[in-house]
Amino acid sequence: MGHARSYVSFDILKRIMTDYFGYNVKLVMNITDIDDKIIRKAIEENISFEELSRRYETEFFDDMRRLNVSLPESITRVSEFVPEIVAFIEKIIENGYAYESNGSVYFDVKKYSSEPNHTYAKLEPTSVNNKEKMAEGEGVLTNSETSEKRGEADFALWKKSKPGEPKWPSKWGEGRPGWHIECSAMAASIFKKYPIDIHTGGVDLRFPHHDNELA
Image (cartoon, rainbow, N blue to C red; front, side, top):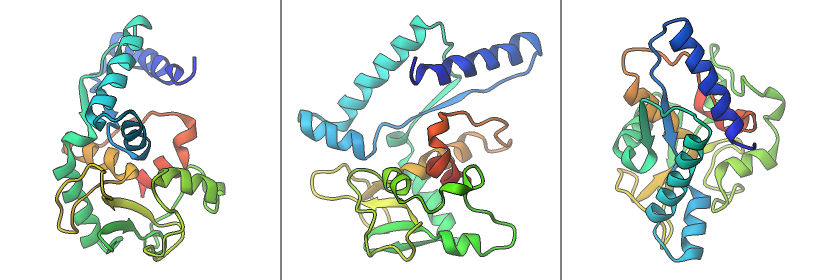
């Protein structure tokens, strides 16, 4: 079943919570419609990232209907939340846990981990020094060994756009969101008054993606 298992499993859990226990569940699904793999494939096919993303999004929801998976109450797409993501990054910098470098912004893992109440990589601590996973999490178009970063484990919140890549304005220059920041920023925008009770996703995303989201 591949990735479908994650959505089928959570749909069953949601139905039990709503239909049996009577909980009012608000399910929000994030659509990553802009990232390194999407940009690379769109360039290869000579189409826009929007066209490529919408094509696969349509196919995905068609698959979900065939599997009788109910639709979420809300769908967020990264490209539609860029101003909120920029504001979220600005707040992280204000809090002292991120820094700008050559038009990009990175999360400062060492500074974050030095705080007494912070623990980095709560979900998968054994992978903290896994360079292969960290490189994959940063994206295929990113040089994971870049000298722009202060620390090897630091991850991109905002990526300076290269020629031919999608770009949005920010105080650091034209760029695009990093992968790990998107869910955190959009969740903060949607769930303003209440915390997230359950965050679902593939087990392969525990590190670095979900651990970076937690940080």
